[in-house]
Length: 215
Image (cartoon, rainbow, N blue to C red; front, side, top):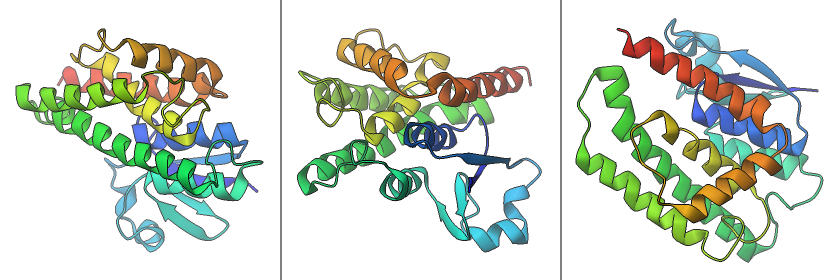
């Protein structure tokens, strides 16, 4: 039975859930949620998720939101093995740490970019520096290893790659982060259905940006 995913196609957290689900072989029933029409504020949505945010899943009556929590849940429930989300306590702890790091990376992206796009604010050099501080950490994590938590692809790579894929649509210069560039190419090549999930969502994200810039 497919898992219902309430989502916005261009949203990086929603794209991340789609990417992880594809890697796990989990079928999703995509339910577009129009935030501009305030569909997330309808009583039936708030009954599922009182924080009225996307992504939200409905797995046969089990409701969950927050992309990292969703991906951890899907990996635990539907993973054919534990390669994407190891059960070994130490290995899992490293994956979790990288997931929390990605939360900060995404927040630094949102803090810098969204005020410009949605509010017409000027670029903030301090916020841009915060992004580069995080990207330096990312570069360090990848020094001498193929993936963020070692030499195997995990959900930490899939979520962080989704965040990182936003940067080409901004003025953030990532050209000096050589380890990260190789890692990103590796994830794109090895993640199942990358183009159908994150790639497709990026097109929607790009279209939204272009639409907002015209206003």
